[in-house]
Image: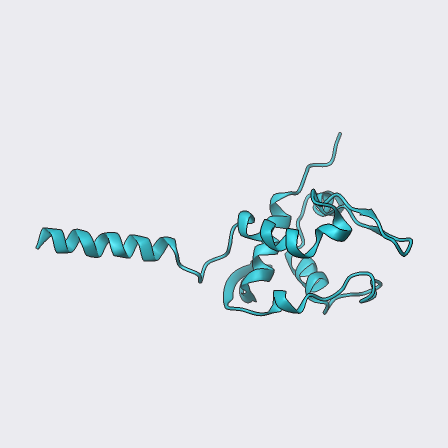
Length: 135
């Protein structure tokens, strides 16, 4: 009976560790970034000159440009294309694949918001690469 209880406990722990309904971590987001963003933002996320003449912004200083606050809602809408503002689709394309897949809960302005997993993973990565503004 104890062996069976131990087996059930171990299987439960394995299931808990592989749950897909939780916010993904930066490592998963780094893979999404590498597949979708490095051509313009460089592999470190520090921006680069674009072939059409503009400059892709430094993604490591998003929070620094906003007094230390990382604007999750703004970043999600920039990536998914809904909050494009002054940036055209030719400069910052919407990535359809990031809007597919299972939904995971992401805290946005105090509200848990269902978000496609690849988009949540990218958000997690971008948040993890923020650097403090120098002196």
